[in-house]
Length: 124
Image 1 (cartoon, helix red, strand yellow):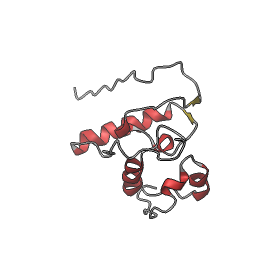
Image 2 (cartoon, one colour):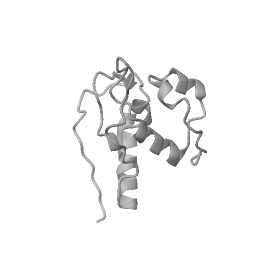
Image 3 (cartoon, rainbow, N blue to C red):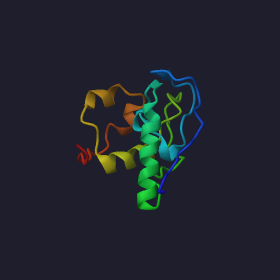
Image 4 (tube, rainbow, N blue to C red):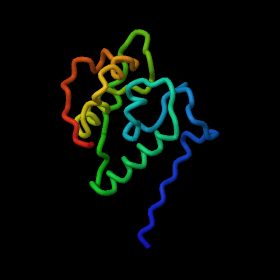
């Protein structure tokens, strides 16, 4: 049959285009870049990223992004709860740094990754 079903009701809410980020969201290893970078809103797209991570995990035999939970926002006061530098660095290293530097500079905690190397884009 080769049927795979994925289910997680951790963020179960009414379906909406965009919802405000009001707490830590998504298990770290499956957290999408936009949340890691401090976006103030999220959408059902976070689930698409999570499913992609699960598929990569099934194909590769392990989580592709195993961020360390202690690499959190060190701003005073903490500007958002979803930032994790180790996780974001692993994602950038695998798929490349986003080209839109303006987008990066507008995201919360931009100072954390402002001096990171620019990773080559691997997916087009």
